[in-house]
Length: 178
Ligand code: SF4
Image (cartoon, rainbow, N blue to C red; front, side, top):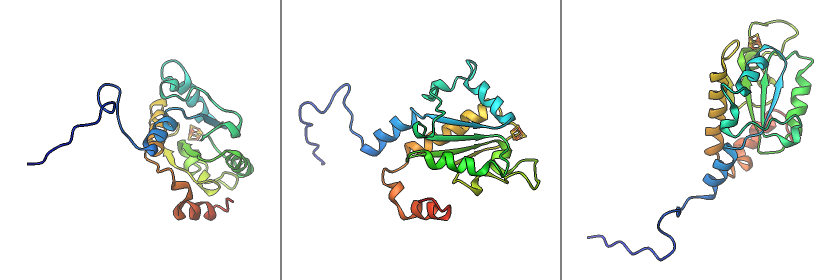
C-alpha cells in the first residue's frame, strides 16, 4: 500500500496552491492585454461596438487601448490595408516590444477581402506574422471577442522560452525582422 507523506505545515489549506511560473505569467498577461487598434475602415466600427457597454472588452482586461506601439502588446488590424499603408503596419509592429501578438480582424486584414485589386494588400501576413485571424465582412463583435479569447489561449499556453526558440527565430527571419 502506498504511503502518502504528511504535507508540512504552511503549504496546505485555503489560499494555497502550487503552479509553474509559465502559467502564472501567462495568466497575468492574458488578462491584461493592451490592444493597439489599427482601424482603417468598416471593421473598425465593429470594434467600437466591441468596446461599448453591450460587449465591453473590459471584461477581458483589455479596456486600456494603446495608441502608442511601445505600450501595446496586441496589434489588432481592422480594415482594408492599402499597399501604401503596409509599411506603416510594419513600422507599428516593429515598435512594439516583445512579447507581442497580432490579430487580423475581418476579411480585408486577413486576405484583402473583396478588394482583389492592384492597390490592396492581400493580407497583413505579407508584412507581419499573424497569430489569429477573425473571419467575416464585417465580423460581429462576438467574433472579435472570440478572436481576443483565442489570443488569450495562446498567451496562457505560451512557454516563457518560446520567443528564444529556433522556430520563433526562423519565423522572424522569414519576415526579415531583427
Ligand atoms: S472585411 Fe468587410 S467590413 Fe471589414 S474592412 Fe473589409 S470590407 Fe469593411
